[in-house]
Image (cartoon, rainbow, N blue to C red):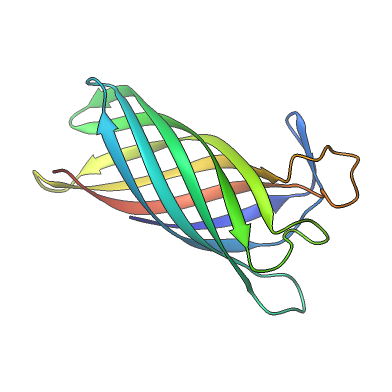
Amino acid sequence: MRGFHSDPIVGRAMFWIGEGGVPNGGGSAQYYRFLDDRVALGAGMSRWEFRPAGKDDVGGWEAEMRLRYYCLEAAGVGLFVDANGGAILTEHPMPPPGTKLNYTFSFGTGLEIPISSKGCLLGGMEFHHMSNARGRYAEDNPAQNQRFYWLGFGIKW
């Protein structure tokens, strides 16, 4: 389980141009299955709340597949990198004047800090991109890049 907040990056961010500038936040539930000691494959579902200026909030749901690699572990604390891809469906076109259905990908890093034999605190930051994949020159594809900050709690089964 995790909660998140995103800050839009308007203009060029690395290789992707994003003209959307709608602040947002939300929460998600994810499940990971370890393939070996350092690699985990996961799936998740997120609830988003976009806050366009001067308008009502716009909700959305994202389904995603995730890949996590633990680079380093010291004193039980794990440093990992994450990558994911998915799709998000919103109640209204987001970011305006886009579409209700957008594809997403993100990558970033985080920490896992054990607090008991079955639980841990998690936190991290990701670069997140959403676009309807119609090309950067399409009028209905403003795309949105964002810095994605998150905190969560993990339970080991």
